[in-house]
Image 1 (cartoon, helix red, strand yellow):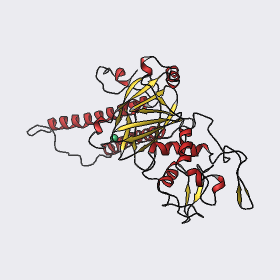
Image 2 (cartoon, helix red, strand yellow):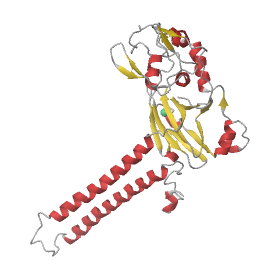
Image 3 (cartoon, protein in one colour):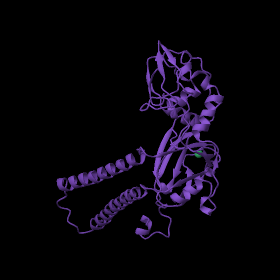
Image 4 (tube, helix red, strand yellow):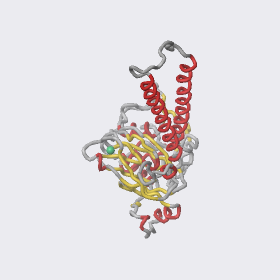
Length: 361
Ligand SMILES: [Cu+2]
């Protein structure tokens, strides 16, 4: 039951539906803040009215002993609101931390904002436009980036809103609780058609979601049809080979350029001595603008890919690069890379790491 029903205003769309795990808690905090505001406004207005009436001009009220200082009252009106303010602060900070700390088991979904639409990439290859389909009962992480200007990904029913920036990844997470169709908005003015940059979040039961994934859905709520091409990792591998990454960035081409096998999450030293972590933002920047930060020991010879790869392609490429190993698991999927007499020994088999539909990056 929504809070609106609880306080008897369910006929007025006072709150959006509560369709995610933290929606209720955020509503309760909002309601408490709102009630406290009304309470203090009421106290101030009532005191104002009563005192204005008692001490109105020509009243016979006793004015012989005006109070200049009353420590009790002054301490009360300082300490009580301060404590209430601190409670709201701690409570709000906890909810904020919960809403932005992505759980480790969250599955990843990629969001690309562009003037004026939302493009969604699922790791298994399904793509959606202005629609996000998810099941109930599972946490999802949204990794967002914009192709042009600042947008903001806003799902009121989930109580999540996250700025989507050009040139840098942001993330948010949610776990849907209530099947249904909900609004998806852009909450940052992003140009002429901003108000039409809207969409639908389809929350399905786990069974309907599986049917949707398998493309067997004939039920109305399983529409719209998803488009499944390759998984993101498969698409990424194709890009890795076709745009030329594989010419220089495999374990047997390290004299030319650093290997991208098992690079994800590793610390890297740059020419200027700076140590950077090879996370999503680092890898994306170094694919698109490789000559800004060059790895120590290498020359700035890589071509610039800015303008040649879309954000969706970069997402897939990063999914593939991530599948080649992480810092916790430094072995490339196809075999161990060994260094013998200063030279990298090629793995026994051609490294290939496409064995799952989930995982992403
Ligand atoms: Cu927008």
